[in-house]
Figure (cartoon, helix red, strand yellow):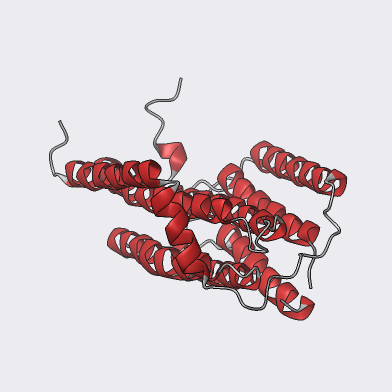
Length: 106
Length: 167
């Protein structure tokens, strides 16, 4: 059986991979996928803590799992909206490279 | 969850997660993301969170990834052409990521109970879908309805954004 710390390290490593993707990649779709990775890393640590904090009835703390449920819902809405924005951008500029989309840059 | 299974699925999640970032071809990235999410769903199930694991497979590996693949196919993106790599940005980004990971490791090492095993669950437990559902509709009823409005707003927003003429 793995320990809580091992799950948290896996979660942290997954978050770091997503963070590195946002920092290093220049394709806006890959950046968006990396954002999803970061959200999922947060979910993993929430579920690990939920399993660790067993309540008086001996069951996991389901508050954290309800929170994960909300995060997944918000992430799904975010993906739908974000991809619609990317499609609108692509239609206007014919590119998904973030360095070509710099109108808002100071 | 036995340690062997934990490490297998953790390695699957992390390796394919890294493949998302490292692949030059967006379709390969999207398919790696599916496998990474499936590994993560297995990790959730290893933590006895069966409902969350199933939701992960249905929503992420199913709906979200179909959306991603659909958009990538729609754009007909080829593998990214090689551009001049900004070396300062690559080194800086890697350094910041590494610093973040080191900090996370330090925090986990300091955390009380990070070396504890997970406590055992009672043998006669009810299914967690029922427990989460009760909690969701009793204690978190208002947030649940707000989430419903949020999804509605997202749907309308997507329709507005998809119109040909943006005004």
